[in-house]
Image (cartoon, rainbow, N blue to C red):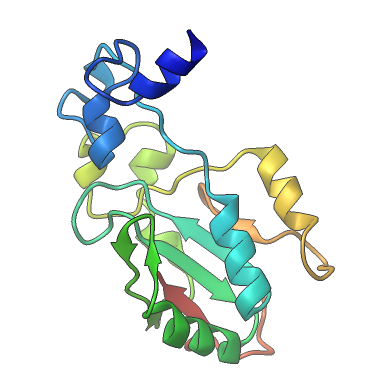
Length: 181
């Protein structure tokens, strides 16, 4: 029986999981769909690979929007500018989850103004097509796991899911440490 269930998972024969959502990551019925939308948890794999290959990550934002200009965007702030530059150069030759990666340096150093305040309060009426960032939250458990990996830090890497205090680091130039992936 388990073999059969595994063979139909995410197909039209699967009466529990939405095959449309499984194939393209979106469903026209949204929350009203009668089947489950198995949204992946925040990808530890992405964080781990970027930090191990390119350098220490200070901050990472993952958009949960559906609009073309924000869908799938991941914003990473590396501790060192050189790490961000190397990541952009190497990631543009990569594919992830069947999609070509388009990486670029970003002049944005503080994403607070980019985040949808209504979404953070659970009140955004524009849904996934909002022009402000809807940040995908991560669990405290995953935050602890990621903090435990890599070099020691004074504080854990920042995964933003809402309003945050003013950034402090004046030792590094703020330009070019953020990459959009």
